[in-house]
Image 1 (cartoon, rainbow, N blue to C red):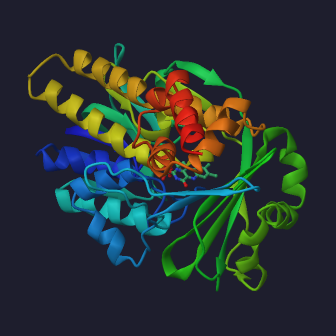
Image 2: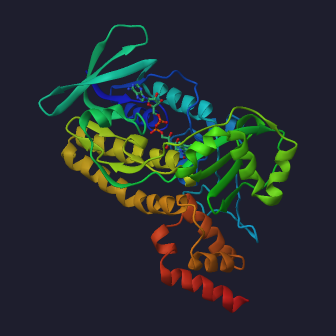
Image 3: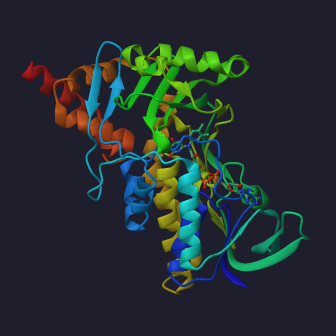
Length: 402
Ligand SMILES: Cc1cc2nc3c(=O)[nH]c(=O)nc-3n(C[C@H](O)[C@H](O)[C@H](O)COP(=O)(O)OP(=O)(O)OC[C@H]3O[C@@H](n4cnc5c(N)ncnc54)[C@H](O)[C@@H]3O)c2cc1C
């Protein structure tokens, strides 16, 4: 009998197992994949996510993987470029974009080092129940017989198509239609350039450095173009880069270092993340468009909220159901503003006039420019910054200066 069985061992599952094992709980961590392995995801991590890695003692491992830090960021608006440095959170202002082959493996290793029992190549095929309570899982090691394992709680960290969520019928809420599809590829021999977001009507392009001297380029477009885009991925990437003016220059002599991958299935939803004997974390419980690359950072933060809730329930500090209800409340309160911002940006429409005025004002105001980038990265509160009176204050301040 385990205290917890965690299904899925990437950026939500492994840290959950690690955090619980470090508290002394008996944890089983399962994934049908083997590690290191890749998944469809670019891998940008904002300062709040990097701060989690630092607290967990794992940031040094990311740095040691030879993944370059990213200290400043650009927003290429065509007529001008805004450049900024994010306000720090817990002393962390850097961003990193480690390959998932690197990140997910080091998270898995950290869970094992903390004492979690790890089984790779193990597919969960069913949940065991008693009345309305989940009591464990059924599944099999590749090629092996079906077995059962029991636990006080089964945690679905099994991604947006979560088997655990489907099995327990976790309800969705605040769902929005799919907005974008996105494809990316890697390049070698790209000369260093400002990491920047390039918004265009119907396109968003992002490019950043990762491990092994490679640069990743992601091009998002409206979901309704999915079929046309998928029919000619080379064209999608080349035309996307072509919109970025001088930024495209370093790619002209660069070599593609991998296939073009991506997806047209990018739902936007929250799911109820707990019930009797089960909980959800990461994409299994909350998924949004990756236009602002928040999934890993959000997963890390949700891991901390969930692991603390389970501990306070298991230790008898308060009823587990009440602690898990707080987990849901905390997650939704903290992450809803960013969810709404991601959905707004993922509509890939032209910026409304008040945002154009803000951009113009930010050219003359370094502090507010940095804070603007902080809203994209989760280090500056979104409701406060985008409040009409605050935006008017910034615009008026810039006009006064001019
Ligand atoms: C195109 C794209 C680009 C993105 N770019 C970024 C980015 O730059 N930055 C960022 O922060 N986020 C990004 N994201 C989002 C990010 O990838 C996710 O938020 C993140 O991977 C969620 O991690 P997770 O552990 O919850 O789920 P996943 O990474 O999906 O992992 C789930 C794991 O569960 C396992 N599993 C599933 N079912 C079972 C089963 N039945 N039995 C056993 N194992 C099972 C799977 O094998 C998998 O390993 C992007 C997403 C997409 C689609």
